[in-house]
Image (cartoon, rainbow, N blue to C red):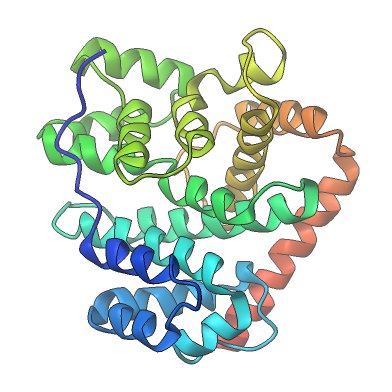
Length: 278
């Protein structure tokens, strides 16, 4: 496989927060001060924390308040996710790309909490980074922006194969390499990388750890929910989405009717909370 393209390094703010969190009693004020140093990051963080998908009973009015409501580990995962966007500030990506990423991240976290005993913070990171490789490819290849527009209707396996033929690499690999460079867990890295073969993995044709299988299922369901609200994929293949949803639900042993009801409840709740926050 081709080596990674130019991937943004782990930001200094994350390294500093990591060091503070290693202390026996982390200094919350110091952590808050680090986030506040970058106004764009702070504003984006508060917006994401108050997303209806995050399920807070009251709006977080500051980083300190958010820490009280959500805990340090969850806050770190969110700050980490928000710095991804800042790292691609000069990349010509539509606002909807990042809005969708934040939504998918929040939904992943929610579904991980509902359907598994897995770490909802890791699920959040997976959701936020699952398509970060697109930004990397766009930075490296001038033709990629037009390429992805004309190939966006392809399924993940088809798109992966097409990208490898055209560029010698694919955005799923690049996203996984970014997760590795940013010191995320092996499960996060593998989930991002394995998206093109998710169906084969979940139907038993490819072997993978149970946790990665669960995270893949959660990601597929999160994209399904996000697609209906945001029209995340501009050209949605309803048949492909239905197939992926069925495979993910079967793997998780979740009743299809129950999921449809949950999805409607989530979307109704999102609409209500979005209106309330305006």
